[in-house]
Length: 212
Image (cartoon, helix red, strand yellow):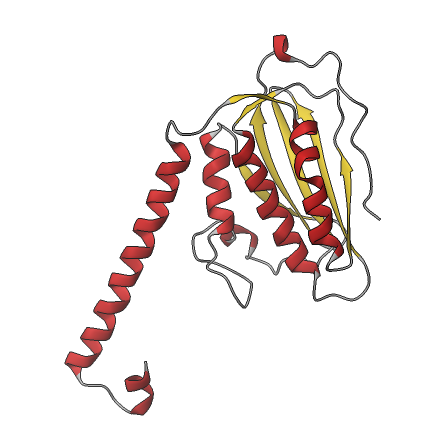
């Protein structure tokens, strides 16, 4: 790039630069394909899990991350939800990615930000949502967020959301984003219900707490 700034490049120099760019793009695409293959392979440990328990295991960490940026998290996860079929660690990673994105979106704002992490039953899937009160998205950005290497941040590679999408799709679900009526955006993803026979009978009280 320095040679481009110094003056008109020779044809051979320009060809060399373009070839390097193409090679880097090919390597990056190969990385994404390997990540997606890993997410879809048999290494995922599927088991019936309770979303309430899955969130409870990482709630302290999420709250600590949020509090460092003067952000509060409210959980709204009914204990009556049926079990889902999932690799718990992978789904926890998806939730961590989405919450960190929400924190990043609000960390530069004034006042106290708020994240609502909720779950609900929608026919044969459980839908998990991460809603923030950040600045929202400019028109046309939402459709690009899940593309590899696209990022609205001044840092990072833009891989967190595509990897999260691959993990969710490996579970038979989908991941998408919507713009809130008020400030901010909401990320949604779904997981298949494990089956009626796996519905919890002695579930703990509803997880609906706001971190102070």
